[in-house]
Image (cartoon, rainbow, N blue to C red; front, side):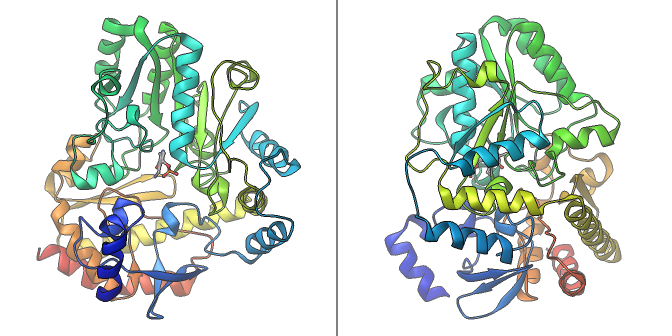
Length: 434
Ligand code: PMP
């Protein structure tokens, strides 16, 4: 593995195509994979791991679900890319609208980054305003405007933002502490007439899992409406993963009325593991996009036929039983994790957003929970590296950062869950002795 990594670093910056994969925060040599099937990934030496990354979310059904693979193969026989409209795009848009009624129109792009970047552009086009508001620790991809105080890889690397982002881009982005309704009110009181939109993760999972306080999303909705700004709900990670209609659909089960945003973004599951993402909303806003309206957006590979085939097959297979299984499997892993950490007396807090969860270590997190990025960074994240490596040694692949959520799938069966449970006690001991 070291040899391959060394060569990779010679020809690819850091040896990776996306920073978190480099094991920067857990140390050691990244595992190069050659295959993935069901709940497993296989490295280039043929070693199999139970996978709790699930390609960072897309593999809701498990890796390489036979029906999804067949749909992609069938699509491939008809051509890899047309650069022309297809009925498959219409079918996928209909499937999304069937689950998310306010998503009257959908525009397909290739990455979550493009989806949020375009949603911001629509919000600016719709309001004629420049300023956007985001929350510290929420990650929305790597477009300039959204790289201020972002989570995920940026959180892991501890960067304040990124080199190469202009002062002007940073100036137009106001960053507010997550779950701080008073701070958001103050920002609107001061600059409400300049604000084009507030963008928020529906339930943040890029600073570890930090769910919205009850009523927080509703407060964003109320303030944006009062001040003529748009609300963009980023469901790239949660969409079609935490429930059939994403976090928006789940809020009702928490006893809250779902907060309906102006625009919503999807990625990951909606493309079934291929590069596809989307933004959606009412026709009135979506028709601001070219060619109907003045807001330009385009993509050579947008709505790619293989990606749409994977998305359609995935959404068609993702019925209620799939979500029930993922929820159950997630609770089982959480319970086993809590038991292992309790056994060694390590204070911790497992936080959930539907079937997404992550674990914060330390007395403070255990006692008070983690409600924002500062608190997430203040937790005992140093315990994660030994925990991660003990799991990896035992054949369980966790996300290589404490700031990422753990992902289960419908393919995580008893055998896979048992292997995770068996690996946890030694990992808990490693974390406790860090
Ligand atoms: N929004 C959220 C909430 C995300 O989690 C991510 C990626 N993890 C993105 C946007 C960006 O998506 P992509 O990596 O496909 O550009």
